[in-house]
Amino acid sequence: MRIPKHIGVIPDGNRRWSLLNGMSKEKGYSWGLAPGLMLFKLCQKIGVKELTFYGFTTDNTKRPKIQREAFSKACVEAVEMLSHENAELLVVGNYDSPMFPKELLNYTTRKAFGKGGTKVNFLVNYGWEWDLGNLIENKSTNRKTINNYIKSNDISRVDLIIRWGGRRRLSGFLPIQSIYSDFYVVDKYWPDFNQDQFYEALKWYETQDITLGG
Amino acid sequence: MRIPKHIGVIPDGNRRWSLLNGMSKEKGYSWGLAPGLMLFKLCQKIGVKELTFYGFTTDNTKRPKIQREAFSKACVEAVEMLSHENAELLVVGNYDSPMFPKELLNYTTRKAFGKGGTKVNFLVNYGWEWDLGNLIENKSTNRKTINNYIKSNDISRVDLIIRWGGRRRLSGFLPIQSIYSDFYVVDKYWPDFNQDQFYEALKWYETQDITLGG
Image: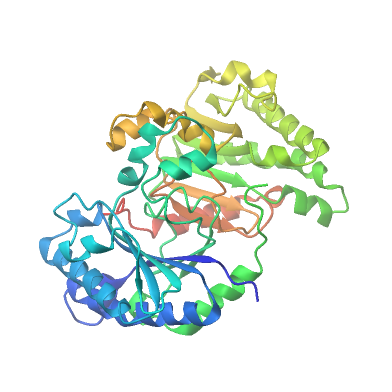
C-alpha cells in the first residue's frame, strides 16, 4: 500500500456533535482528544512519518470566550497525552498573542518524547496571514526560498489532508504545504472518528496519481 | 437560491477524456472550449459576478511540446470566443515567460467586451510561486496588505471552486483567494461537462454555511 509521508488532519464538527448529543457547543472539544490519540497510533503503526493536526486558528479565537477556553484546553491536553508517546512534537502558531496557551510555549521548537519518531505538528493559534507574513524577507519567487521564509517552514509538504465534519474547504490550513495535497472529506463529526474512516481515506489516496501539478 | 459571487473552475481531465475517446492526449483541450462558453453563459444567466478559469500553469509547461502548444492554443481560442460576449476579461499569469501566448498580452489588464458585465479571469502560465513572489514588498501580516501584494490582486476571494476530472486537490489554484473556498469535485472529465453537473454543485453550495474560518 502507498502510505502518505505526511497527513494533515482537520478535526472539524466537535460543536455540531456536541449539540447533537444534547451538550452545549464547547463541550465537544474534549471528546476529540481520544480520537486524536487513536489516529496518531494508527499513523505510527502504518509508518506515516509526519502528522499535522489543525488545533485552532486566529479566526477561531473570535468565538465566544467559553469556546475559546475549551478548545485551548483541549490542545494543551492533547500535547500532554502525546508526551507519553514516542513522537517529535512541534507547535506552530502565533505565540506572541495572548490567545496562545502558555503551557505550549516550550514546544514552539520541536521536542522529542520517548524514543521520538513520528513528527507531530499542532497548529495552535495558527493564522495563514501570520504564516505568510515572513515572506517580506523573501527575495525571489523560487519555491525553496518561499518555503524557507514561511513561518511554518519546519512543516513539510502535505500529501493527504483528511477533514472530518463534512465541509469541503481548507479554512486556511497551511496554504503553501497544501498546494498539491489530495483532499479527503469524512462526513462524520470528529468525535465520531473510527479507524475505518481513516482506512477508507488511505484506500482512496492509493488510487490517486501524484503529479505535483505536472 | 444563494448564488456564489465568484466561482473558480478547474477544467481537468481533457487528456484522459481524449485517450478514452481514441485520440492522442493533446487533442482533448480543444474539446474543452465549448463547455467553457456554456459554463460562462450559465453563470451570466444566474448572476455570478466573477468567474476564474484555470487555463494552464507553470507546472503544466513541463509537459511535452505538442501538449503545451495544444493547451496554449485552446486558451487563445477561449479568449477569442469570449470576445463576442458581454464580459470583462483579465488574463493572469507570468507574461515575462516565453510560455505565455503573445496573443494574450493585451489582456493582462482587464478589458471589457460588448456591454461588459461578468468578470472572467483566465489563469494562463500561472504559478503560485509567481503569484506570491511580490510579497517581498509586503510590510505586514495584515490580510488586506497581503491581498494587495499578490500578483493576482485583481482577483477576489473565490466562494466556490468546481473541479472536473475527479481529482480532489487545488494544484496551486490561487492559494490566497481559495483559503475559504468551498470545494466541489465533479468526477466526469471536463469535455463531458453538462449543466446538471453545474446545478448540482450550486445545490450543494447552498447547503454550506459560510464561516470564513470563524
